[in-house]
Length: 110
Length: 105
Image (cartoon, rainbow over all chains, first blue to last red):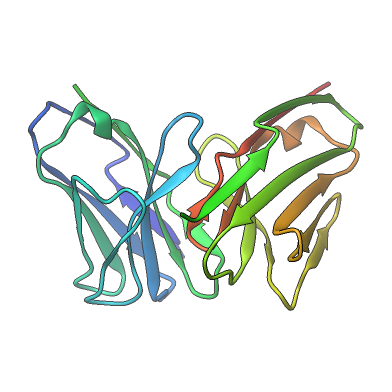
């Protein structure tokens, strides 16, 4: 089992560009999450999903969109990147509370 | 607004010391409190505490949930350099800022 995987691992964007981060899990988990982690601020929830075809806003959803077309995949989109979105992005999935995290994507917006 | 607060934010100890990390929370609908360890990359799960499971132990690590005080502690005894990491507390989907623990030889 690969667990939770994220693509890409690193990315540099210019302000205004768009991109999609892909998260995939092979554990058949219903719940999936996208977090961002900034120095000194822990993990902040961007969006989450409680099942295929459903999404909900988290703590910091502005500037991001998500889709969960297949149970195993959760996509995070940035339509018009801003320097404030420079961060490390973690995807996670869960079944009974315990979350399993992907390795993270380091995104820099210049 | 829901919040999770961890203290201290950072801690430096020597090998063999015992440490206690704190987590307090204010949330609308408590279901569980989780502790994670984060070294260089992704957080890894340590413990989950709920109303029906308020104390957990694994080796040198242990954790207790105090539902009356809306808090939890994570204890690490006989610390080792490999315990150096950021320890994160989460209540459902809300995380605290973490405690950065450094264990010196």
